[in-house]
Length: 284
Image (cartoon, rainbow, N blue to C red):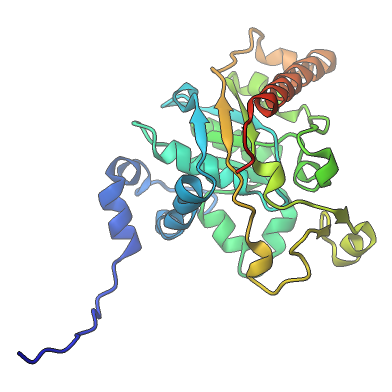
């Protein structure tokens, strides 16, 4: 019997497919008038890529995701790593999979918003320029605000210093006190090893106006996109119960108190990392 293959000319609409899989998430945010250009369609197109990395590539073991509040403002604070900030994307996927799914808005250094072809995507998938004013706007809107207090120093540290936290900027504590919202501590094991940084060429980074210029086993030796392929390290993420600070907003001006709380959060994450490293049986 004669037959021929007929190509399927109708491509699946990513936004429609996403809405079928995650109707609660879409219903929550589709009509939101976001001041920072968030686009649920752009997020929907990007989600399958990061979902693959979360479920298949890094095989993320997420503990305590239920500790992140289903409603209301909160500050999500964690250790930063990986040269390319993949850790934020993994948390976004974890939150999408909650029974009550939510988005998270990470504060991102200005440099990422200078990259042609990238800055719009960064904003449309939920990231926001890092400033205290932008953080206040997000918290007033009842959003989850993701902050990595190590900043770019965290993702740019050399491989020999993996899982050794840089000093935390205490600004997240001031925000939590000002807005009277909880802090949720997140400790992530795995990210420090996906792009082993052998050396940071600081003079070249300054010349190119980059926060750092990493030399890895793949970059800059291999062509794009091979140099962006991460190591398939197994991840483990631990989410703590919300930390409600027993102080009024006026205490945000108490520099000593703010710094002490920031250090306590940093030490909590460092203890988590040390313990998870001892318990880890295999890198992959």
